[in-house]
Length: 412
Image 1: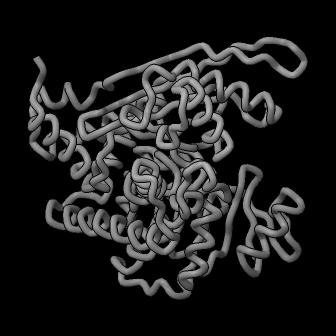
Image 2 (image 1 turned 90 degrees about the vertical axis):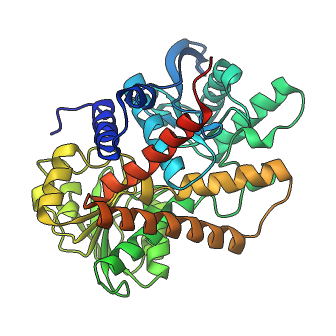
């Protein structure tokens, strides 16, 4: 297992990029320091009348290239260090895809499964009110993340709007369509993972048609990636959730229908496996699309996939990364592979600001265009600079933020 925290890993990746780009120590100091860090106490009145206190966080890592942008995570293990690390990765992700954003992240240290719907709403609204002074459509735009969805975004938008005195749909993205959400936002991260998978196979001279894929995770990223990949002609041979994985299903639709009815993956004809066994299947592509630290120094040696596409944030530890590089596995890093979500969030924000909305085809065409441009830039940088794809992606993102800092200068 890794001995580094998420923040240590993110700083190590930043240091590598700074060194390879030849940036100064002054630039390192600027790039390695978050712009604004907020911790708040979030009280919740439970349905039984008891009041409980939760820790909430919001980190705006950078605002140099525009307002900060990032998800809100409800998970019991979230802490300030992880939030800073994820906000840092969002900064490089937005710069890599050339979106006019800085990176942010936030959340509450809570298990949403322990909350009733009404409790979830109360907690979301109180958290929003606590971070209200630092968010806004031109300041910081939250979005859904692990443990949150469009309902939370609707409550956040309403709380902000009530305090503003008028509707402000652009304060969050990932909202319901009727409240100013964008077509294609729900599936966007998975769609981006699918585009990255297709292009990575072509880069390895593997025909995507019929290529085999195992996906760890069957949530907002894993499910939609599976749907998109199946539509592209790839074969999904295994998927998993927190309880383990299955293989032997006829199609993703069949498995999803069973999951919606029975709340498990044990469809007729399937065979069970552990999450680690799924990682070690003999497939063309492995997609870790659950939580961080799935591929470690312990699990990486058994991976037989030719390509790993990171659907989750930070699913590979530094030790796991080193093993995969030694094995010659092509790793498409998270800040490229799962950037579809923030790209379509950007589209939603643009539509809200213009009060003019696009059809689904326009969203998909523009998503593909931005993903393809970023993918080609990473591929070319990795080849020309003789670095890994992860290093190339960070060099591009970090380099653009550093350039923006230089051009803006230091005030006063």
